[in-house]
Amino acid sequence: MSTASAAPTGNARRMIAVVVLVPVLAALALWAFAWPAARSAPRDLPLGVAGPAAATAQAEKQLTQREGAFEIHHYADEAAARAAIEDRTVYGAVVVTAQGPELLTASAASPVVAQLLQAAVAERAAAEGTQVRTVDVVAAPKADPRGATLNASVLPLALAGIAAGAVVTLAGLRGTRAVVALVGASALVGVAAAGIADSWLGVLAGDWWAEAGVFGLATLAVSGAVAGLAALVGAAGVGIASGVIMLFGNPFSGATSAPQMLPEPVGTIGQWLPPGASATLLRSVAYFDGAAATGPVLTLTWWAALSLGAVLLGNALKARAKSTGPAAAERELAPVG
Image (cartoon, rainbow, N blue to C red; front, side):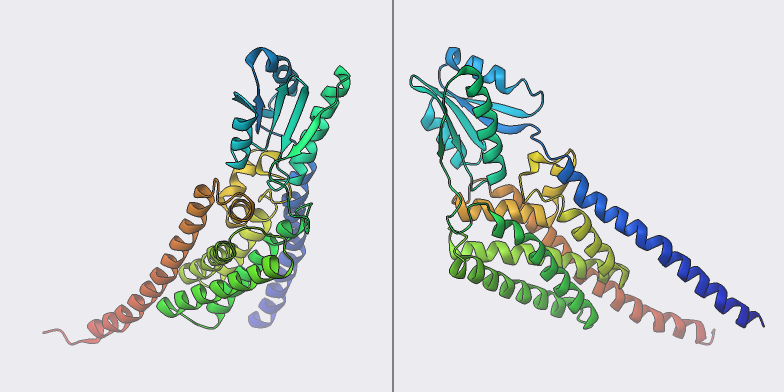
């Protein structure tokens, strides 16, 4: 009688949990993806101003009218401003010359930011009755002028990493075997992705093997996180790690615009997660000869190293539990004296 009554109660609880959990997850996903996009605007976006201090004062004053929008960097001349753009210190620069203002952009760094700068400077020039010449210092490739392909690569890499981590976990691979499988799968993903994006589509313009390394490292960071957490906490770790990557890593990555275009602290958090770090690193490697690559490389490396360490640790803890369990039982059954 009690068993029969308990079954419907358990089913009712599971039904209520599903009815409540699904809308909560949907609302969380909508918030994570829609809120940063709806609040997209420049926030301390690095922008250069080049030329004599007296000549650039007016330009800087007008650019800083939008409080908190731009982080102004000063340069002596156009050459210094170009170098800063190529080093990924700034996204663009306004150069004041005797012939009039000139805008330097880098659509390869972010087509969205390049268009935003053009609109902002053009508005200022129109108010003064002048024209602005725009120079794209580091242009996006002709095959992908809007950066759509690079932006679209973030989600497939995350899915590939989640799939690899989940398969390794479900296949029962443990310890060193799991690590070898994760590294091997990630390396193959890197080669395949570089072959598609660079060799076939021609949307990447950097060193082929460096690009493959970025794709592979990004995949390993995600797959290692999934498998590592699962090794420590069980199968639930697959869902937890996957949820963090999908619900926060992708929408917070800033791949479609720039981290400085997202609300704070979303832009910063996104760069701490594999999707954001991989998008930033891929731009640096593909278009800027590796400039400003140190930060995202360290981020992805730490994710990969700590995750693979978790895989090994989880296996060691389980092996220890199995070995100590029977030994403890034998000690309890052993006769005293």
